[in-house]
Structures are given as structure tokens and as C-alpha cells.
Length: 309
Image (cartoon, rainbow, N blue to C red; front, side, top):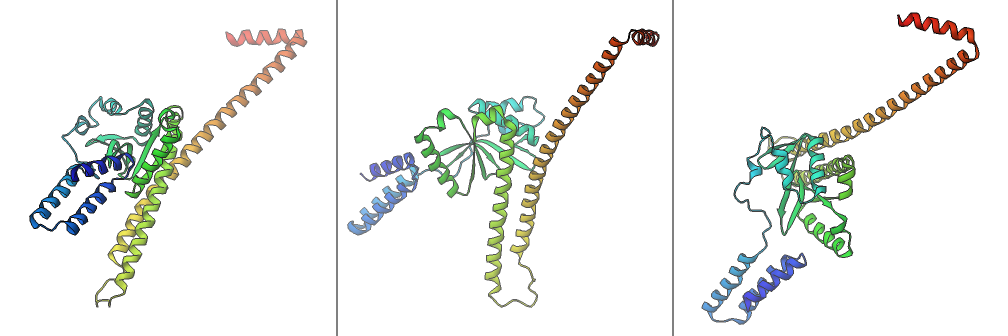
């Protein structure tokens, strides 16, 4: 009965995204054992059953790596590495997002991951009871949502529960519609840059707050004679904050360069059209003048003939 109830708690907890139900059931049986079971050998046996079954069926919070996959053996020297990563995508929209990321950040394979442009990209990463579409820098999740599977009220509620559970683990979640990755991949990259910049900034602020709290606690004790003026945690926080701020600034600069390039391209196209239109108007005026004056037409034809010789 104990084992059956624990299995039921595990199944229902997984279905409702409540993995703690299993442990609460185990704690409940433990309290019952100490309260109502008085025979010492029976207590030990029952505790072994409770926690043995719990350890056997508990959800895995962390991914346990298995044997090396083909992706882990790929390098930039392999001609077919891009296609191998594409085959691990689960939809054309994910393939489009992968291609856009590889091009935008010049990603290359390294130990089963893609690295480049100061970031790391992983695909189909198991976390808790979920499988993430993409994971950037071990903290920013990117989910490519197709309308077919993510637009119903049930799917929206399920995604919200999933995001809430992952957020408690410290992850940042970015959801991009599949139609954006398919038809406007540059917009998808822009969303990634903005989300990553905000996520890095928030991480830097959180580290700074922790460093300030640590230094405040250290300031309460009497300083030693040769104690440095600044705490080590403050120095490390400043370095990390500087790196994160630099990365966020570079992402913002890249977006500004892309916008400036697009603006210059549009301006150049407009200038070319204007010059061609003015030339066409001048040619029409010359043609009208030649048609109105036969003598001028004769002189023009003679000059044109001599020029061709």
C-alpha cells in the first residue's frame, strides 16, 4: 500500500507539474510510522520501503549525461556538422531558428554545444521533467512555439505552469512564435539579443546585491590590522558586473549597427531611384527639343555619328 501510494503521488505530481507531492507523501508515511508503529524492526523495514521507493521513482532534477552522442564528437572541421545539428531539431521552425543563430553569432560545434559570439547554445536539453528547445548560456531558455501546439487554452495554461516551474530553478524563458523564426529570423535574433542583455543585467544586479549584503555582514566584525579595504566578494562582483555590462553593451551596439546599415541601404536605394528619375526627365526634355527643331536634330545626329566613329 505504501509503494502504491508513492507511485500514485509521483504520477499525479508529474501530470500536474508538482514533483514535491512524492516527497510530501513520503514524509506523511514517515510521520505515520513513528506515530503508530511501535515494533522497532517493523519501523526500520517500513522506513526502508518508504524512502527506497521514493529514491527509485523520484523525478530527476538534473540531467545525467549518457554515453557520448554524435554531436559531442563534432568539430568545426567536419563538413557536415551543421546538418547534424539540424537533424536534432523537432520542427522546421526550430531549424530556421538554429540557422539564424549560427549565422548571427558565427557558432561552431564544441563538445556537443555551439559556441561563438560570446554565447553558448544547446539543443533539446532535459531539465526536470521537460525538454527545452534551446538553452543559451545555461540560463536563458528559448522555446519556439508553433500555433498548432501552443495556442489552445489548455496549452497556454500548461506552458505557464512549465515556465513557472523553470523560473523557480533560476531560468529565464523567451518564447518566440514559429512564424517569426520561419519568415522573420532577423526579428527572432533581435529578441534573443534583447532578452539576453536584460537577463545578464539582472544577474549582475543580483550579484551586486549579494556582494553588498556579504560585505555588510563582514563589516559587523572588528577589522583586522591588515584587512583590505574592499572585500573579495565586492571585487569579484565588480569584475562579473563589468563583463556582463560589456556583453550587454556589445549586443546593443550590434543592434544599432544593424539598424544603421538597414537605414543606409534604404537611403542609398532612394538616392539611386531619384538620380535615375532625374536623368530620365533630362533625356525627355532633350528629346522634346530635338523633335521641335529639325535643324538641331540634324546637327545632333551628325555629332552622334562622329562620336561613334
